[in-house]
Length: 330
Ligand code: UDP
Ligand code: MG
Image (cartoon, rainbow, N blue to C red):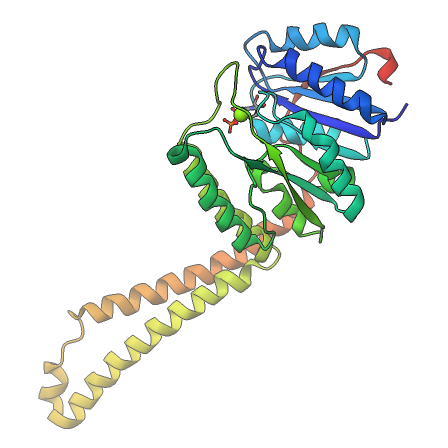
């Protein structure tokens, strides 16, 4: 039977957490009485994760395993999960047990009540350290909400529900999974937030360190660009180029003017005495003009590359070794 709900779980060395998470999920989903599947994406785990998944699958055809050839990262795992999911709704959840499956029914309720396209978990009472995790995350959420126009308190929460067509139409690259609601915002989606429980990690350890903060910041620039200018880069680069060019042109004109005025006032002697060749202003004028031209050309290049980018968007960002599913799941 075609599932109504697809649970997508990115799994990277989570052997310890999987059995409990699976039991909790199965319990919650069983009570919901919708046909469902669980798509576990093994992101090149080097521990026993795959064996644990296979053992669970042996007793339960709901479980499908997408086994990556190597570690491609959480974003690629989500992307694969979305591609293989067959349900009308896609629910993402972390494999480490930090999200509580018991929150799923509430998220579903809100999705149905408000005809939302995305319902995002909003972690209350987070268990992670304040300085290295929660503070950067707070700042990131503010920034992302402001610059992308899709306002959420907790972009980083993995527990989210998407309508399948929305999730499947977001093209994910790099580490952009955190920005899915913002990227989907481009389609004009309706997004809601629901408070969810955050639990401490019991098994294994976190796959991310502090360096993630910087990467999220750089990704934010990218997403802002993608959302506001990607289909018209010339409007951004061209504008910067024009501003630089005008500034350089003005300074250059002033220098040339001053030299001529000095010539008129002081004759040939005055003209020669006013030296602009050594003036730092001349350097600045030349620099601005050259930079300005470069920005305009960059804008044109970006326009061309952009067209290639959009043509080639069905390019995959992962390689699947095998899809493991039992006959009944077909
Ligand atoms: N994960 C993954 N591939 C990676 C890193 C992480 O599939 O390269 C999965 C991981 O197994 C977990 C989820 O992404 O299910 C979130 O990772 P983690 O709990 O380490 O992040 P944190 O909660 O510390 O932010
Ligand atoms: Mg975690």
